[in-house]
Image 1 (cartoon, rainbow, N blue to C red):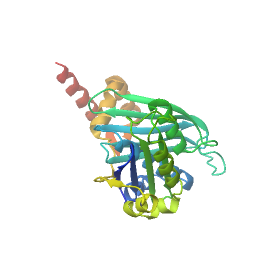
Image 2 (image 1 turned 45 degrees about the horizontal axis):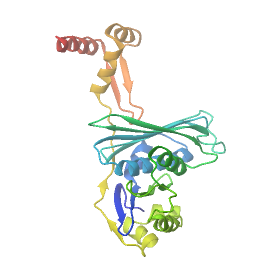
Image 3 (image 1 turned 180 degrees about the vertical axis):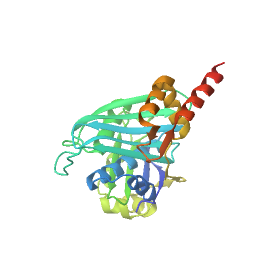
Image 4 (image 1 turned 180 degrees about the horizontal axis):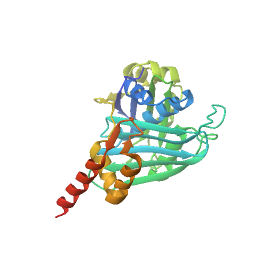
Length: 291
C-alpha cells in the first residue's frame, strides 16, 4: 500500500506543481477499533482520514486541521482531524436505520477548520452533495473557490487501509485557466497521468513504486516523510474545564441525581468520572486560582 501511516511530499522539478501522498493502516484500524461502524461508513471515514492527513501536510504550521461534514443522508456527521501533521483521529455519527443503498451524506456542508497554535482560527465552508460529487471533488471545489488554487485529490479506503494522493499548483503560479500560465500543459499532463490511478494501486503499492508507475517520465523529487498515528486529545483536565463552565451548583445537582458526573470521549471511549468530592475540590481550586 502507500507507505503505511505516513505522509510524504513530492515536487515536479520542471513545473510549479507539488504533491502529497499518504497511507494509513494501524492509525486507521485504531480509529475503527473504537466503534462498530457499517462497512460503507468505515470506507468513508478512511477517505476523510486520508484527506485530512494530506491537507495538514500542505500547511506550514503547528496546530490542528479538521475536516467535518454534516449531511442529511445516512451519515449525519463525519469528522477527521490531524494535529501537528502526525496525530489523527476521526468519528462518524449515522442513522439508527442505516441503509447502504441510501446516500451516505446527501446534501450538506463541509467545513475545513485550521487552528494554529499561534495565530487566528480559520474556517472555510462549501456545500456538498454526494449524489453528484465525491469527497475528493468537494475538497477540490473548496480550494478552487476559497483559495483559488488548482487542486486534485484521489482517495481510497477498504476498511483495512486508506490512502490518498493530492496534486496542487503552487500558489505563486498563474491563475487557473489563464492562457499565459506556463504550467497549463504540465498541469494537464500530470493530472491526466494521476487519473489512471486505481484504488488497488493506491492501497497496495508503496510510495516510490506508485509514484514511479504514475510519473516515471517526470522529474520528481521526494521529501522526508511524516509518521502518522492515532492519538486522542481528550484528558481529565479538559473534562474538568468543561465542568467549570457548568457552574458548581449545576454540577453538584447532576451528582445528586446520578451519583457521579461522567464524561465519555466520543473519539476513543475513554471514561472520566467526577464524584461530589472531585467537584467541590475542582471549584475550590478554581476560586483559589482566581484570588
